[in-house]
Image (cartoon, rainbow, N blue to C red; front, side, top):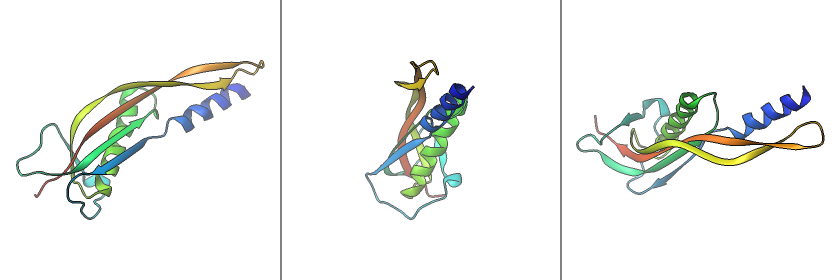
Amino acid sequence: MRTIAIAALVLVLAGCASGSAIVTGEKRAPIPADQVKIYATPPQGAEIVGVVQASSGSGIGEQARMDYVVAELKAQAGKIGANGIVLTGAGAQTGAAVVVPTGAGGFMGLPSNKQAAQGQAIFVRE
């Protein structure tokens, strides 16, 4: 039982969303993440603010992991003053195995499956 609890804790800690943003245009005042919209193509007149990327292993199932990724993309875009993101790529990412103790003196490797996405952070005048 202890081994299962430790394994679950390791997976939860390893699954946090992470992201980054690189400013390539004019940085603006921060915008709340809930005001950042996702676009398939840039709206007319959109200004490129930067590039954002995120990945996450949190959540059970691909959709739950992608929801965390989208939330992190919006947070990163908002930090640099973008109110939109044009997705340029998204998908599954298999990483290194997470090693957990088996309780019998051995260890077991569990694959680290993540979802990742990247896009252009844009500012759209409304």
